Image (cartoon, rainbow over all chains, first blue to last red; front, side, top):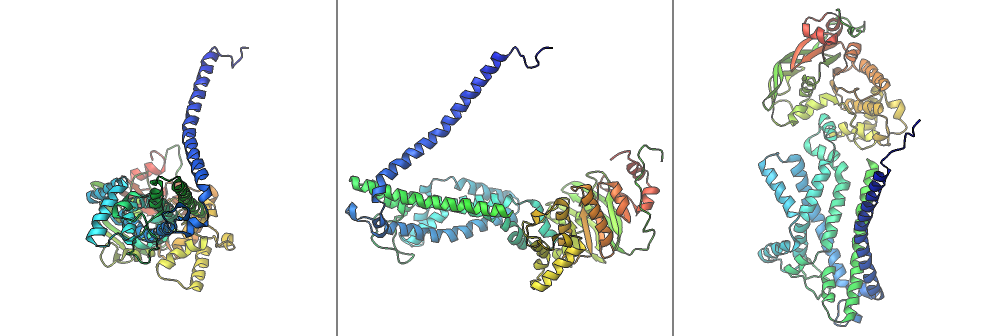
Length: 292
Length: 269
């Protein structure tokens, strides 16, 4: 009896396997490129910045002397921005998403709005800065205040939040809506008791990721005139302010090496804050996934 | 009948009892856009009995079922002409609130669709919608509804557990309990057993026999044998028309329309 597995094509097969290996190496290389570049970046930043990562960084205001400089006003400015931006953008973004998904008639006008929102999500951030300057700073006369900054950033993150929330709402199975309607629920009862509880974790994830993007933004705030040197904490919504990326940018632009190291420590703080926000997003997602 | 497939066996009980009519449909047409989905439907459905809709796929049986609690309203471009009368009221008239209609005409779907909430909250969902917030009252409703759906003994110790921890058949009975919790008059079941195993199906079939003493049950089924087993009246649909409706034993043993006979003896469908 012939060997069932004896085949004349062993050479052809080894060629196919070699091919397979080459592709595998190529894809591994593509993955490693990003990881290596990112690791190199993190290592440089940490070696430069670790020395200045001390309590002074959090308690001191910026100063002409690098040794006395800190980013207290910038950290507090960023946190204030976040606290202002989060509720405004959540309410407006999720509200718009609910309207578009659940209430809006499926007509040409809705599709036009939809198209615009998707496009806005890709508009460069500096354009929002110009918009914020024209609307909030000039027209509303809010000057270069914390409020102007927060509202401008809200504009920036709104399209992202709307799109993410819409996707989350759309992912709720039709059957869950039907079950609610069939019990005599109104639209809002169905949305609030059946749709939103199912969609909220995905919505929150989208909101947090959008906010973490805003926390790292510099360009729109420079346009609306956030100050680069702020030696006090904002006491009202109408005070001038600065945020972490602007402070970092300011230090990086200095020629002295001491300021460069200070910038590196600032970057570490900013990155830690972003990592915390992302971890929060992931934890939220996992928490609610378990419930479903 | 000289065919290879025998007509389904009809149960012996429930002979010609005089049922009161609760649903009366007169000359009803339904269009999805330009598609004429239901054609001149004339049909009466008896109170406190099981009525089965049978017919091949796409014949309009589910569509007609969904007109009875106006779930079709949510499909854009749906147009209905004619009369759908439930207990003396035209349900498409202005004097009927669709929320009240759906409270009185409950529905169970093909796929069990519990909410991602606890067993308790699933059953309490309906009463809460309609304004019951008293804890003791809700407890009572939940217990009664689960008992009626023959699920109470299986879940009474885990009411706080997720509805998704139940098996498929239990989930479907939970959906029945949820529908009963708002105290309906009529229960619509849209192929409610088609996704279940035979044992779960049997449980739900037995349940319908108990429930019909209190509720009017209208069910869509793709399974003629099921219709023969558990229904009192059977309605045969074909291409959007009601071909024939009659007492189940009569329709299966002595259909008056040739098409009904062809269908129940397995010549098509």
